[in-house]
Image 1 (tube, rainbow, N blue to C red):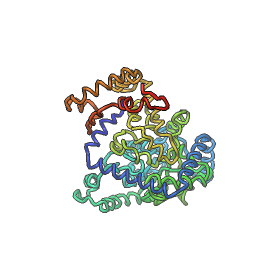
Image 2 (tube, rainbow, N blue to C red):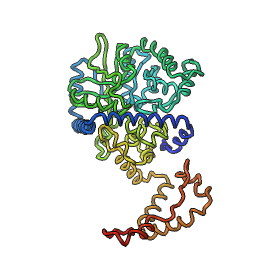
Image 3 (cartoon, rainbow, N blue to C red):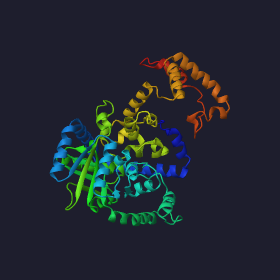
Image 4 (cartoon, rainbow, N blue to C red):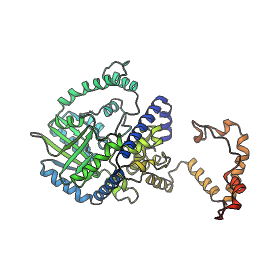
Length: 466
């Protein structure tokens, strides 16, 4: 499979100027709300440190806590399954649904099931999966992946949703009112929930000492999916384990504040045992997580609690949109998770970053995201997976920057010639930097020329510029 062409994908989204402006404005608004929550809580940085330490402790003792979680879940009457990879996860789900004669599965938002490509797997075997989260349902009906881990359809305008619903649900194509659209979707989905024979949820946190899982949502659809049908399946990435119930409070305080700038999600639901007459199954999924845990530079990404704060703050993500990343996980966190799943396919994503470090700065569990992005770039370069033009440009730049006389000669030559070159040549379409912007006017003198003229002879530290 070819590498994702993030640049080309981003170019297509940038052409949708209304959508791009909408996405940028909304996500930056979420970032500002997150900042307001942070400033309102003097203990914010202490919470981040504690959350990071809890996650690192849990991951460092993951085998012990997974076994503890299994023991307690079994004691609660829950069936526990282990899935080494996506194929095993999907096979277990299919076997459970087939054994219960299930033809329709209603589910709440779960990035793990997207990662496992579960929906098409079950569809090929005659089982319909109905997404009950509004954003996920929009994306499902439009045959698109989620573009954001918290707000999956945030790149769409109301008029886009109106078109999708008119085509798939028979709504009025000229009515773009969000309330009308949400109500029509709810009316279409509720009967499916009532008739479904099985429901599935994801898991935000799995508590080892209780064998229970916690699911955080804003629409209540997870509770309906879990409680209306007699069979409840829960897909759990093994990195979601936290040791104790009291640890939960730390993450609940950070999750929604980091994601949406709200104190807490509308629903924080705790599932510990099957309801009377029902069945509950936990499916613990590895799918490459153990291998990532052994990566000295990249295991920290397993601390992620899927809050999306890094996506909301990233200038590249806010302009290129989540679908441009071509993977289930997008934005800065996607740039460090996706290559662990398929290095070749996602080798371009670490370059979809300015390395400004804002992603690391807002991460509630202190993942060193921008440093990992840089590490991935090093690996891509070492394995000669850089495009020819970029590889040649970097090699040439390396030669010039490592020879001061050559560098100064180049600067002087450009300073002399560039102002007289035709604009069409300077801002050539072949120069990707000049897409959407023009080269600024050349300054009258370089910094070195200014320094030599004004400061060199008066520098008390003897600093020189060569």
